[in-house]
Length: 274
Image (cartoon, rainbow, N blue to C red; front, side, top):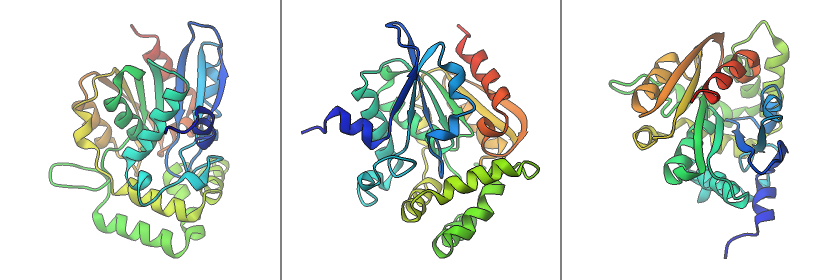
């Protein structure tokens, strides 16, 4: 038996706003590691006059049903989170949506779109990374030992790790309010779930899936991002059949928070293009 539609939407704390007309297209936003749907508060409202806006919390994050997080089964891979995303789209009977995902949320969207492409019309991937670990011929930004140390730090002192990692991720040391916002987001996340999801995220490899994505895609990349370096954006652009890469002259992994107007400009240009 399938779960009731209401329980699917409650599980992912789905909120719907914006245009209500029969012909209004839907735009779906999905956050990344340590975040929640509030991450889009500087971007999503700009679309409410034209789109039906759907915001989702990954299961285990934000105000989602944390009891639904299954570390040993469903959520042991990013594919399980893609299943959750598709469940929301089915529950809302959505097809040909515009999908906007950040970081690992972007890659979860890619996995979902490869499985059910009819549900997606356009994809926007903000600071995506299909593989964080460097390999021969591929620059992901981290060595395996770096990831091991990062995960060990999360295990030993999640509070201290959050305070140290948030400034690196945000890349906006001269804007402490943004660093504090991200730090607080990490600290509001269940540490056990955060540690597990970080391991799934940083050890994932979704590069082979990129070749199966044929939906028009925009890649939005910060020029200076230590989490997903510029080489990753170029790699994804080269692997996708129909994509364009926009590099913004900004720092950090979260341009939708640190450079919202530039991010909106890139999205508008892409979405209004025939």
